[in-house]
Length: 229
Image 1 (cartoon, one colour):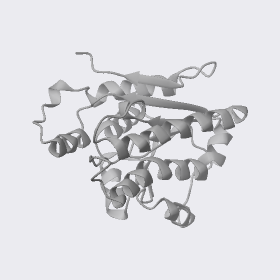
Image 2 (cartoon, one colour; image 1 turned 30 degrees about the vertical axis):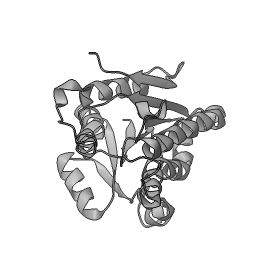
Image 3 (tube, helix red, strand yellow; image 1 turned 180 degrees about the horizontal axis):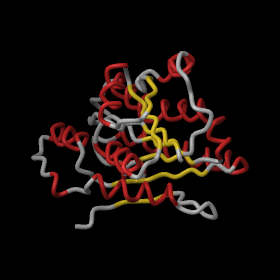
Image 4 (cartoon, one colour; image 1 turned 180 degrees about the vertical axis):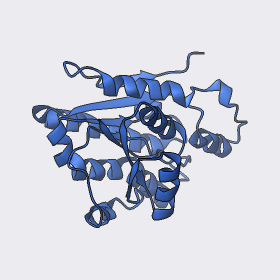
């Protein structure tokens, strides 16, 4: 049975992906920021295993994993977790740049580095849930877009580096999706949040599963998912 390690499985797109894989009988390992969150995820997804590591502190992931049991192989590493704080370049303080770069870019890079040996064993797949902001940047989105542009660069470099090892690499670029993060964005924008206007997380999950399930003679490298209306 395939084993998928997923970040951000607590809500939104990550939760939808985890639920779909869990329902079809695949094995899950879910990254949690602390032990309490790990217990919540274990209750929500019976039979899933958990791995504790704080993406806000990527430099400590190696130490955290050294205290836990890692699997001998992973079929896919699905990066979904992310944070967003809007603000103009003139106003956004360094701490908010650093936090977004840490969680959205440096942590995925470090998590991938630490798990590449077991991904190579299975000739597995790394999938990054990016954003439309990873392709274009708008006013007040500078820090978040910079982290997501960097994430695309990470995926492109990794794809070239790991092709000889049989590791596939996919970037998925969803448009605005009806998630708790989107609700937070609307609060920051001072706008009313109407979930029905945006992509359902289940639709993004379907695109992710399509990329993961693609036969081994091909790979989806970059996939944009845009609202239907």
